[in-house]
Each structure stands twice: as C-alpha cells, then as structure tokens.
Image (cartoon, rainbow, N blue to C red; front, side):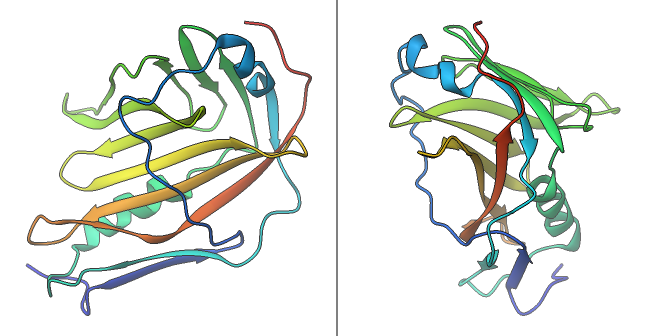
Length: 193
C-alpha cells in the first residue's frame, strides 16, 4: 500500500543543513575527564541555526506510508527547552520535563528499550561514539531510525544534530539527505559525576 507518492518526503524548519557521519557501534569510549564539559544544564538557544531541512528520496520507486512518516517526523521534532546532561565513566543520562526526551544509557553501548502500552518495543536506544563524540541512535522497529549527535562547539554551544533513515513500503531503509540541528547554551556550569 503506497500513501505518499512520489517517493519523496521533506522536513524543514529553522536550523542549519549539516552533514554528519554515522558512528560505528565499536567507537572507542573517551576518557571520563574529556567528557566533563558535557555535564550540566542546557537551555534552548534563542538563536537557532538557519536553513535546515532533511528529505527522503526513495529511489526504488516505492513510497513511504503516512504512519511511518509521522513516526519519524515526531522523533525528529522532539526538543526540550531545558535538560540536564550527565556523562560519567558508566552512564550517559539526559533528564528533562519534556515527555520522551529523558533517557539513561550505558556508556559502553548497551541497549535500552522503551516499551509501549501494549508491551511492544517502541524504541531501542543505544549510545555509540564517533571520534569521541556521543551519538544516540533511536531504532523505531519497522519504521527506521533517528540518530542524535551531541557535539560541543569551540564556543561552548551544544549542538544536537539529528539524521534519520526511514523504511519505505518495500522495507528498504532510506537514509535522509541533510540533518536537523538544535542549538543549546549552558544554563549551569559543568558538574562532576
């Protein structure tokens, strides 16, 4: 059953179009001392990057279902006004009042599953590392995945850069072109774990 034809989906908003690499499952975990700058409370920056957007283009001629598109759009659009980030030698924790934004993951890449009301897995979340940068991967079973790269800039801004992949009607996973970037500024000084 094909709902979205032609096989192209575009998500756009305020931010910056950026390309990010995927983190390998076996990326090396950095030394705990190098992770301290991530710790603390972060607030949504009033000035967000401009010209941001992603698009999905299914080149095999199969489109995407409306439900699949809605689930990926919802996961891509999730944002918190404020959150606390705790990174230590054992855990990566994000705490927020925003529903669905909080999670705690083992730093070594162990799997965390979010269960739905029907006791089925809604998301499988893992932490990977890409050249010392934490990348959270949210697998939506049968739908696709959303990847969040937590990147500290030289000026101390925290950029949460999201990329995605979505399954088309045939079951092939189609990676998005572009990324969504959300900018956060420090609300409190880094804390010790």
